[in-house]
Length: 133
Image 1: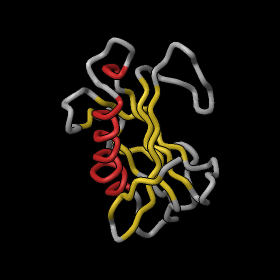
Image 2: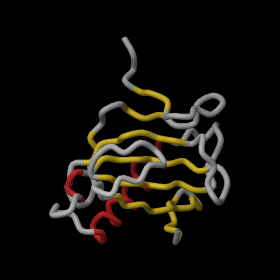
Image 3: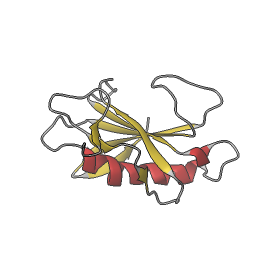
Image 4: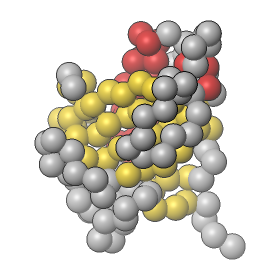
């Protein structure tokens, strides 16, 4: 029987991120958010970048979550979900990108009918610090 924990996509040497499959995450807005995947095998502009991609159906056009509310949720996801799952003994990211989409989207694809929000953070003293894209 497995532990229910899985390594994210693009596992680094020794595994750098542990995520629980199918986990529903609590965010400040109360909207239901689930983890789609974690990607760290695609470099970002600042070096090693961990991308935590979440599904948040209520951000869809006509949904109940506006961009400002989604931004607060993404900050909470970085601080309370992403940071605790980064192995302190593994490679450390220069940047964490949190994304929300109203439905699953393959990495790197743009689908015009899908609402997506992205925020980037650097980690400083155990805290996610928002960075402008």
